[in-house]
View 1 (cartoon, rainbow, N blue to C red):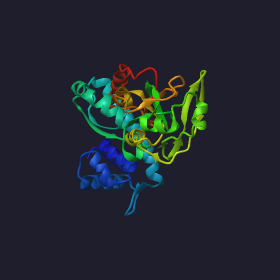
View 2 (view 1 turned 90 degrees about the vertical axis):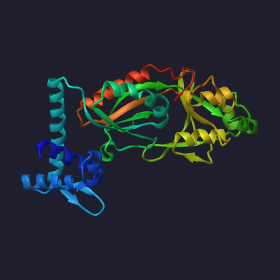
View 3 (view 1 turned 135 degrees about the horizontal axis):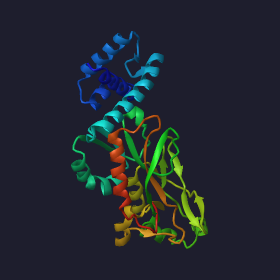
View 4 (view 1 turned 90 degrees about the horizontal axis):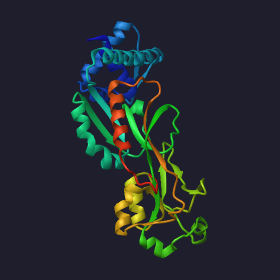
Length: 305
């Protein structure tokens, strides 16, 4: 087996912490993956991986070899792309924010496939925190401030949001005309939990050019965007969501915008990838294409995402 293929297999096993998952990612039998790592260890004369019934992790030598392999493989792919002028090809694993993916990205994917037929895409979607390296993703699209310093982010859009509630909720609590009314009228929020630690996200408002954050009582908390909107529709509290996400509900009167003169702060959308990785040609063309797709979209300039 080619040495670079052995390196590629080894890197994937380290990152996925599993022979089975690594083999699945690279579309090869598990036995082939196991034999590849065994030959690599025999050739180097050292044990690279510690294997248990639950996980696989690199030894001290394995960690050092992994870091070198990552750099070598990135350099090799970059060199090949520079001199062959060939279109990028291979497997690209991407994790996308679900609503953005379904609304804007997936409908446009045919253009990407026509332009880069050699790239096979594996798409996952969700709102949770993703460990790119250990879950085997090449890049991830997320909205919000970039708190993870181990990732490099490229901003690709700025989403505008609105504060909304159901007509039933407004009938019970009243329509606030100022931020002070939120407490005076006894309003409550649906709490959105975000990030690896499920940190509650406060409501935020721009008042005279300054950001003001408010935490209201919440009897229900959620971790998914669809559940968040559904809770508002059920009259369970105020929420702040992308304006495009609730445009039809606002138009049909199923939701009502609250405090439009003090809108939430616009939310950035970024593509993230590990900072210790040189971008492969596959990732680079996908990031560029996705940036172009989102740059051409009007997300509704009087609200937030």
